[in-house]
Length: 261
Image (cartoon, rainbow, N blue to C red; front, side, top):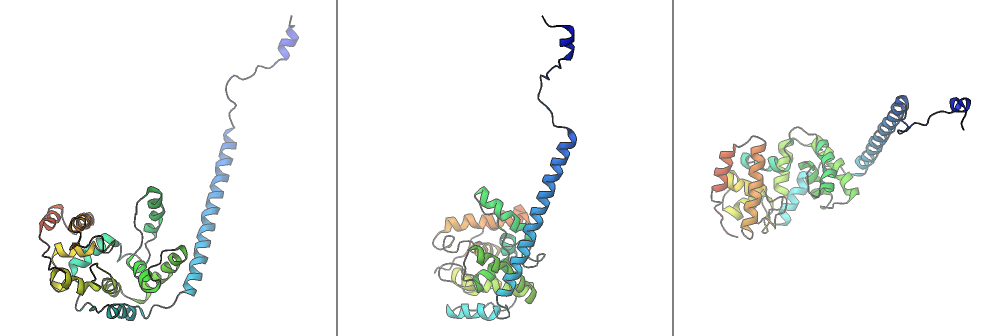
């Protein structure tokens, strides 16, 4: 039989889980926050060092225009004369780089989205016109991690050396539009039999859609795919406020006026 003294000396055992004191939880949370901040700062410093090395190791871009012209000459193509067609410019920028006039050659917000796209299994974009131009003109279209860093450094240099209209013109001239057409002038004439300045909205949106996959969206060989791609370009024009939904639907219904190839 248990005596009263023995009973008094015993402590009851808590039946529920033992809770960590609040001060300890706060301390642990602060430590994790400090570690996270240090990790982010470390990555930023590392990125700046890598970008600085890339800046030093990449060439100057003063010859970019000459390179683009040489590319056209090698394919017997003609550089764009006169002003950049507004419809083509609007369609291209809405689809490929909607913050073109606001970024400094690199869209950092877009670059942060790109890894999320890889995880999600689809492309969320992120490369500016300057980056794409740098990749094609200076990196031979390569896609490796080293080339990606070099591409960023070259894009910053392009933005520093040229005006936005000059970069846009080089991009349109340097582009391959499928069906053996290089540069906007030859693409407009080859697909539609018109000068770039005379391109309609329907024709401009078809051409703007070719940059992602020019052979796959060739309107002469793959009209159904080209029309689906044009629909995406029109959706982007509506999203950025260049066209209303009704206007975009009217453009989608317009005939392309293909000249053959």
